[in-house]
Length: 116
Ligand SMILES: [Zn+2]
Image 1: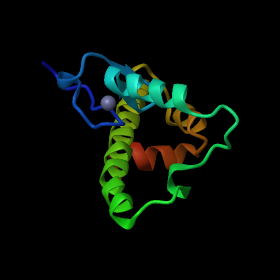
Image 2: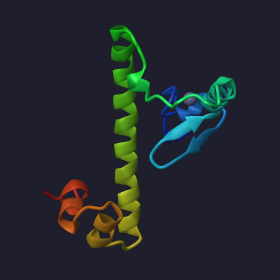
Image 3: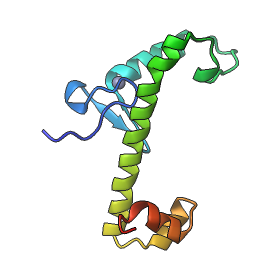
Image 4: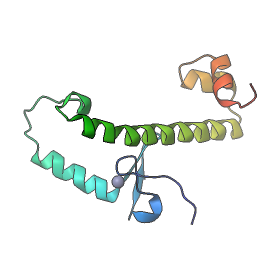
């Protein structure tokens, strides 16, 4: 079976989860959807949202998160390259791709063409 992606939350590969739902360059497995729903159901509705990095955390927890954040970012970057390749296969120009990514045609070509 072809490996498509890992869950961006728990990092399990698609072969180890029931379902994997795709977002824009990220994925979430059915187990993480269930866990997230439980967190949402248990959260006070009036509470002010806090960015995860603004929560009080010990250094060990923060260091433990770095690998997961890097892995999710690397997977998103690989996905972006695949989507750009798909746009090229469909006849998309570097100007169109650059426009979609809010960068110049030249920047898009330099980043994604593999020709520089
Ligand atoms: Zn997951």
